[in-house]
Length: 411
Image (cartoon, rainbow, N blue to C red; front, side, top):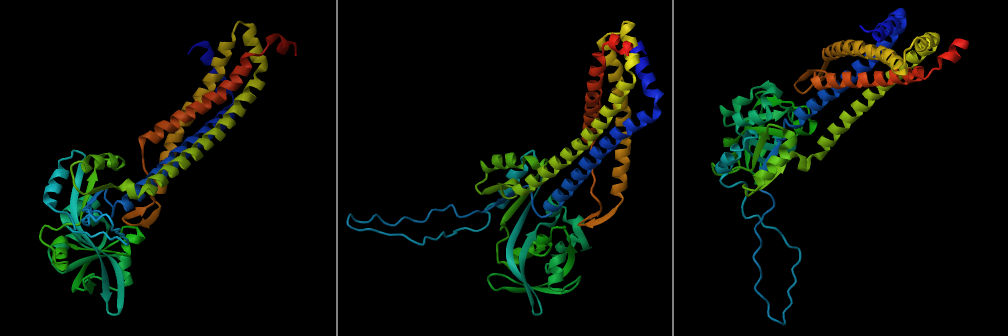
């Protein structure tokens, strides 16, 4: 240690209680920063998991018909034609050449999983109970790769759909609405008036009430038979990419080679991105506010130290110490407080996160409160904590460097 550092260390250790209070203030601020951002990060991950349990990153489907209606013959010069109440006529349904499109999609390096579906609105009946909902015909293996539906199964096994043509898996809310359970029969009625009975092989719960109350799944093979479609018929192709935040960029590239509507999840669900961003901003604002309050505490302590050491500072300056030396002495004290408080704060923040993570909380497949351990939160907490303590120590140090030793020694 040089002389300035030795003096700073002596000042710090001469009043241990003041040092502990200063360290605890920054410790609390940093630990709360880590906890708030870790908790919000965990909440965002949970919401994303729930949202993408029924929604893929990119959806490919047959949008409104692109076929233009046939034009009427050119009228004679004296004839005026009026066209009103025009109607679109959809000449084709679903996706043609789905296998070729699936192969084209898989060639994109960003794609991690892809599956085909048949989605239709049907009526679910059990006795006199009748509920409308959405029926999805799925390719079970690829569906699980895209949506990880197997981890949301609370009863049964999703793979059983491949074993029985009359098997169906229901959302928990839908099963409750029509009063059925495992092994019961449920009657489906399509828009064309076709009725067929299915046996309940499983019940899933994603945590999204709108999905759990309205969705059911059968194998895509059974769906083609139910809706009288050919063996290549597909209404939707669902795609997942490596980074769902970049799904819009990938969808733009796909749209150039695929003759159907290619829609990123952001196109119809921008509120999910906005709500996640707002939660992150809220967590950071609260955390920085806590650190700022801790900074005021350190400033008060350092200011009191300067006032108490006035005569010592005057003697130092009379002995030849300049203003930079005085700033160095007090700035080193605040830096030590920041480093010690930062290290202790990161440890205490980890402990708080660990304790909170053990609190039982049931939502979808999650059994405890969602908290994320992220290295960036620790780095940013330590960085902000250090900046706050340096600023809080610099202001009193600058004040001390301007002291006139003659006036102080004269009293």
